[in-house]
Length: 300
Image (spheres, helix red, strand yellow):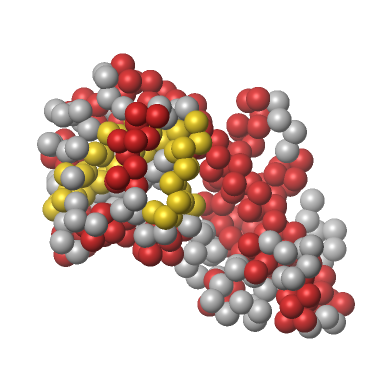
């Protein structure tokens, strides 16, 4: 297929690379020309504007930082809907608010163009390996049209429901992950203070009822899982600032529908304090290191 990919950041660039490996023709655009150059070095085509990137495209994939960027790229002057000259499938893999996802999808539908919100789970590692999970919101027809494209970038591709359902699934997933990570981090901080060996605690809890992905694959305490970001001083992985962004999206969504999320709210407060302390650029499992430097009663 002829594919345009808008947003060649930490996720978009490896996603584009996997589409190239799958045999697609991929034209990339990003506001940072250095990233466009990297895409061209990998075998892709570069574009100097959105209009140039999407010309003749059969599918358009976007991977952008926030809802306001998605709104601008799709609906703004010089954007996708203004410059579209084919009837491609539109796939937005950004993590944004449900309302914006539904607004953009409705605008596309008004032009007779199918669109899918398809945020991902799996982080930069999954983007590089081509093993991302895509949580998709849109019509059955849009999902069917997008699936051949998504299969070039991911392993698990799930149709969650109508427009916005993909974003709803993503923020629910990440709220659960943040709550679990905070719980695992707290337990290891307490174990350290009680004199309990980290490896012994991991050996016990990883095969007991305390088991979770945050523990067994991504242990926030250095040692038990050497391949986790905790083993490389919390570099790489999923930044704490991005986790805070997702937790805020979750709280906004919960407020809009009156859903009680006390643990999600507390996790958001923890990650806000962690980011305020200057840890936003480190992997979100740095919550263990941050908590380790505090005394009881210092966290609200």
